[in-house]
Image (cartoon, rainbow, N blue to C red; front, side, top):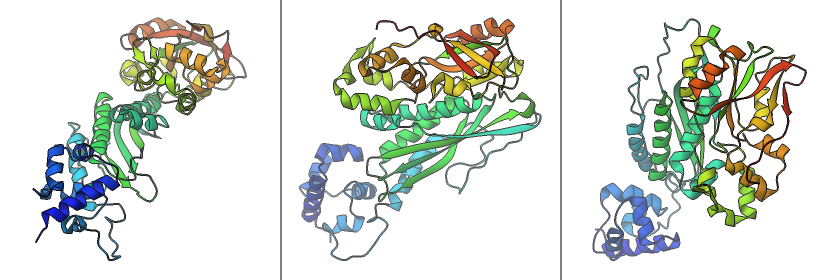
Length: 418
C-alpha cells in the first residue's frame, strides 16, 4: 500500500537536493504550487498522468517515487541512465500537432521511421533537389539564457531557406534534430512549434526529425539544434552566378541586424562588459537588438526567379560581404563594392565602439546591414529594387567589372553617431 507521507517527504527532499522551489517544480509540470505542497505534506498523491513527468523532473524512477525511497539495489534501467521512454513518447504526442500540414506532398506524419514526400513536379523540367544543413551557431546559447526558444528556431529555418533560395530553389521540406541532456517537454514543444511556424512562413513543411537525449554527453538544460532542408529547382533555372557579366549592378537587401553570425565575438564583449546587456539602442535594449530573428528573403525574391533577370545571389553570413559574394562571381570578373553606400544599422556602430573593433574585423565578422545580395543587369535594377522594396529596403552598392579579385571593397564605411 502506498504511504503518502513517505512519498511526500521523498518528493520534498529530492526537490530540495535539485535546488528547486515548489513553484519551479510546479511550473515544470504545468500545475499549481499548491498541488506540489499537498503532495509534500502527504495529503494527496501525484496523479498517474503526472508520474512520469514528476519522476523525470526529480531524476528518479517511477518505482522509486511510488515507494518513497531510492532503491538499494544496483539494477540498471534506461530511466536511471537519464532517458525515460514513456516521457519521451508523451513529448512526441505534443510534437505531432505542430507537424500537421496542408501540403499534400507530405504523405505521412510523426511515427514512421522516416518521412515520405512526393517529388513529382510535372511543371518543372529536369527537376533538381537542392539540399542544405544548418545550425544557429552560438546564438542558441544566448537564446536559451534569455528565453528566445521559439525565436532561435526562426533564425535557423530562415537561414536555411536563404541558403537554398540563392540558387533559385523553392523550399519543400525540413527535418530537424534536437540534441539535449534532459528532455523538457515545454522547451522541446517550443522548439518544434517555432520550427513548424517558420516553415509555414517560408511555404514549406517541417516533416519530421530526431530528438536525441544524451545525458552522459550533453548537460541537462543544454540544447543543440540543427536542421536540413530539401528544395527544388529546374536544371535550366538554377541561379549559380554563371550568368554574371561585366556591367551588372550589385544590389543589397537590408538585414535587421546580426542575423546568426558574429555571436562568439558578441558573447566575448558581453562577458567583458556585462553592463551593456540592458543598454538601449534606439527603442530596444542591446539583448533585444542582437536577438532579432534572422530574416528570410524568399518571399521578396521568389517571383523574380522565372523572369531571367537574376544573374546571381549571395546570402551574407559568416565572412561578411567579401567572404560570401566571392562564391558566385565567375573567374575573371570582380564585384566592386562601395562601402560608403552601405546603410549600417545602429547595433553594429554600438558593437564597434564598445569593443574598439576595426572596420576590417567588422566586415569579416558581420553582415554590416547587408543580409542578401542580388546581381542583375543595369537595365533591370530599378524594377528589381522596386519589387524587393515592398518587403525590405533594397539599394545599389556596386557593379561588376573585369578583375582578378572576385570582390573589391572600395571607399570607407560611413558610421553614423560614432
